[in-house]
Length: 91
View 1: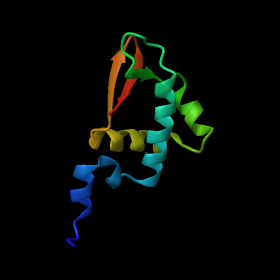
View 2 (view 1 turned 45 degrees about the vertical axis):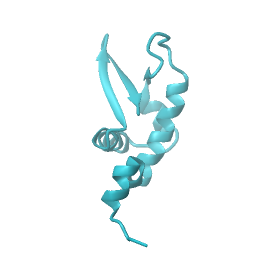
View 3 (view 1 turned 60 degrees about the horizontal axis):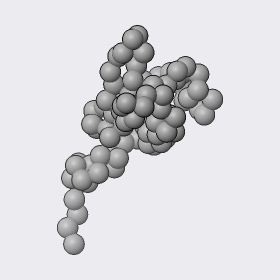
View 4 (view 1 turned 90 degrees about the vertical axis):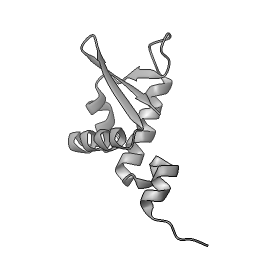
């Protein structure tokens, strides 16, 4: 049986290389995704008061920012601005 590197497995499943906090953030963002308020683009969602809501479950602003950066780098999250709101799309 071959031993593969972490990078090898992260190419197969990008969740493999993420930190524990980023995995928790990914799961938390999935909850927001189910409460989308855009019927025409159901894969895109926004998180009003994101920092307040996520801080209630133990995320600091720096945890959120670094987690979002990590998710974008892993190609698991896209962000776009529309009408001065940030919209997210999980992959």
